[in-house]
Length: 200
Image (cartoon, rainbow, N blue to C red; front, side, top):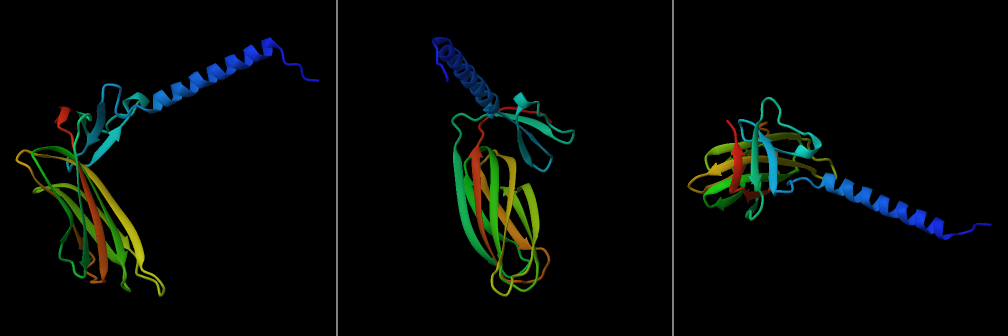
């Protein structure tokens, strides 16, 4: 027969409280992007590719990367969307957004729909005005007898537009296959006006 005493209740309460504190500690340890001061830490390469890191977990920049820290508070986001049909290797602007002067992280995504009977190699450049921010590419297999073939490309980078300008994503069929392909793109620019460190 199980007997419940006041000692049992107190012990159970202590276990619950300790468990709750440990759980809270785990949550605090994980919630460190941005850090407690509102600073986001990242690393970027010479072509503008950006990678966010968590210093609290001991993450650091690689030898080919440079550190970039910014204050994420009071940032402003901008978004542009678009859709294009891509029957040739001529680059087309899939998505674009006009930005005021400032520093930005750029995230571009394109959904590829190959409805042709040959593979296509889709290459996309992401620009901050006239500077290349990122480059991604992917081969998309041909459509089947019953459905088209879908794929998604994503790229992230950082750019500084001293006079403002247009951030855009241009894509082309680099395989020159000419297969009918449709592209739906989204480009998001988030202001990082509070850059606190950008080492050469």
